[in-house]
Length: 323
Ligand SMILES: Nc1ncnc2c1ncn2[C@@H]1O[C@H](COP(=O)(O)OP(=O)(O)O)[C@@H](O)[C@H]1O
Ligand SMILES: [Mg+2]
Image 1 (cartoon, rainbow, N blue to C red):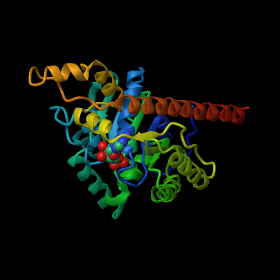
Image 2 (image 1 turned 60 degrees about the vertical axis):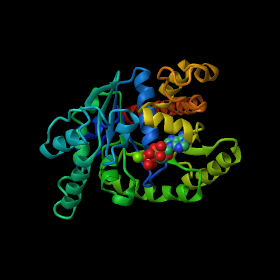
Image 3 (image 1 turned 90 degrees about the horizontal axis):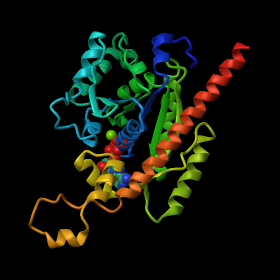
Image 4 (image 1 turned 180 degrees about the horizontal axis):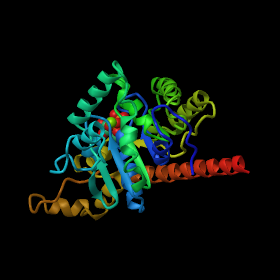
């Protein structure tokens, strides 16, 4: 069980329903939010978890990464839009992988966020609408992952995601500017806690570490530890900067481990050379696919571990409170 404190806009039932909802956010663009979301989702679903991905970014990049952007079921965010506006149960795209459902993002998401913004300047009654809507289906899943847009277009979508979440995962690039960006995220978390007291940072993910530059990882870690001041861990597993494998994955709509599995079945270089022009071999997959897959597997394991440790600690503190 989780704590559910009084909130003006979220009932305790809504807060309880979001106990396994994690938003991936940072405020900044290009720090790996979407790629982390989709890889985590695909790996967890592969491990037998029932997973829902919710895309609050109108660019719809989670659908590209998961290979459903050209699927006839891709709805440009309409399912979530309708559910929030009319207080209905949202209908995700089912089983984009076994056990993985998606509430996609697209131009309907942009319209929904515009409506939220307009409402905020009037009565603000819609605030928490994404939380209340997702609460209708979150208990059907072992984990819900919400991908968020960068804050350039405003903080509305990020705040709605944080109101709907128990945990926040923040990917950062190993650069001082990106690390300092965490401070504005921290301020937002504190302000959202007025309405969703339980939301907290689960951990920080280092994303885009140059290969063969271990000192970059080390320097970034020490700067991060200083600025986090013990409030959340920096995961040991970081994600390497491997442009070729990433491009291969997103062009094919595959997660890194799926790409690595496909790479393992491709014919060897000499055979392809011999058969050049014959047959329709797909373009060769980058060697680094395996490294990227390893990074995500390691990271996912650590995230699950941290989530479980936090949940156990909460259960114990509740038991103490009851005694
Ligand atoms: N491991 C990686 N190495 C290099 N580039 C990557 C890697 N993973 C993702 N990218 C690329 O980096 C860019 C930002 O990633 P993305 O996940 O879209 O970030 P965000 O959602 O924070 O904007 C994208 O162009 C993506 O294709
Ligand atoms: Mg993104």
